[in-house]
Picture (cartoon, helix red, strand yellow):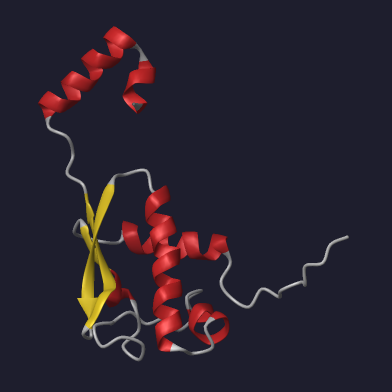
Length: 135
């Protein structure tokens, strides 16, 4: 017997989030992302992204019921998951925001490996097979 109560979808879907985050990351001119800047100014003083008409508005309006703190955390979790699934390598650093420790995150795209490292990886794969490249 299923005892779980059905919970209505009150927020953004995973597909909507992926499409919007992918668009934002692709449009970045530099290899670093300051998450606070992708928030609207009404949510974060460092924000300058307008969510009107975007799927992210559902996070603010519905899922988090216009609560600033919950919206920031929800947005951060969606972005974290998206960054983990991206094909290129990224690293992150937590930052303080509004005197709150680790309330923001900065993502940086990892540098492309040097030609020497690329040649070494190709040599390793040719000698030991593709399985070693995932170790």
